[in-house]
Length: 61
Image (cartoon, rainbow, N blue to C red; front, top):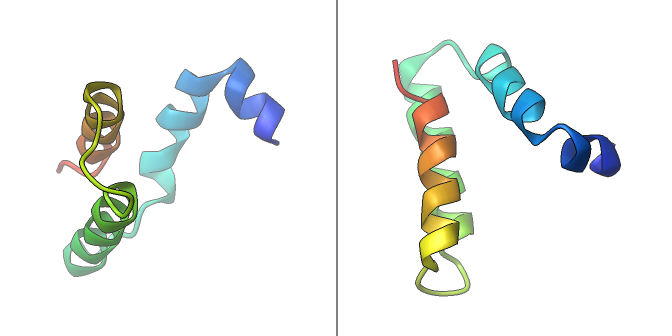
């Protein structure tokens, strides 16, 4: 599956909203966890920040 994600990254990103939790509270909690994990090793690089922003956009209502 990892190879498939590398081959079609946009399709993988496009599929995420359909898999997200319906409840706002759950979505907020999930996004909070994603942010904590993304920044666990320290300050994000510009590229990492850009990628995180893409994922955050998937959580927008």
